[in-house]
Amino acid sequence: LVSRKWRVRPTVLDLGDGVRIGEGSLTLAAGPCSIESEKQMELIMDHLVANDVRIMRGGVFKPRSSPYAFRGLGMEGLKDFHRMARARGIKIVTEVMQVSQVEEMHDYVDVFQVGARNTQNFNLLDALGGVDKPVMIKRGISGTIEELLSSAEYVFSGGNEKLILCERGIRTFETASRNTLDLNAVPILKEKTHLPVIVDPSHGIGIREYVPTMALAGLMAGADGIIYEAHEKPEEAASDGAQTLNFEESARLIRNLRKVYKLR
Ligand code: PEP
Ligand code: MN
Image 1: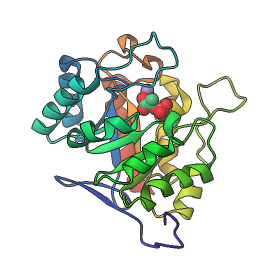
Image 2: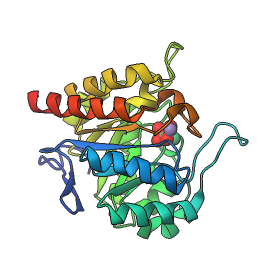
Image 3: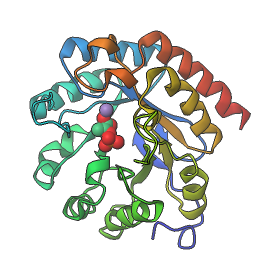
Image 4: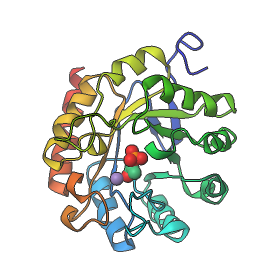
């Protein structure tokens, strides 16, 4: 069902208020790895509004490698996130980690994010197949392109056709970067499926200085958009600070992404 053989026309998702994801427009989503406070959200939303970015990312349920690391503000944080975003015309993409969260999060998100660690959580995918909200599925940490498409097939076949695929880097033998952003996946996915494809260069390379370069490369490879981490003070971020852009870097990247998008 997610194949071009089944549907030739590219899928375009309408989030409302003029925010579209898919062919014909550039999708930009930025924000912190973790939602930390109302003050932080205010600063980040001001930055997004000033740069005409309509989608904010940020986790309230965080899958952390260590159980002692910051694991997010949970539902209370999401409710604040939602209230503040609504007041500013911003759409929310945030990670859902388990089936029991789908219903409680439903009214407070615009796009459910399935994280790389949950790409093959088939119960979660089944549950998301039953909701009327877009789902962005990240590629598994050691997942193949075919496995990503199979995960999408779970949601689609469950009845939810509002899907976005996200290349966020895979684990390889290379240790010079956090992950290896597989830009090969972009043209391959664009050819194989009718779904929008978004690139996450932050997790893809994991090193702040190189994030803009890989973001631009992702767009040139044919992605429909870029999702990246931005924070008012990356060095103090509760998670993923080393791959997070400050506002100046973020604003420059946004300008360059818009220029490059027009050149394609
Ligand atoms: C994130 O988006 O902050 C995140 C945890 O991503 P991933 O699932 O790709 O590691
Ligand atoms: Mn992160």
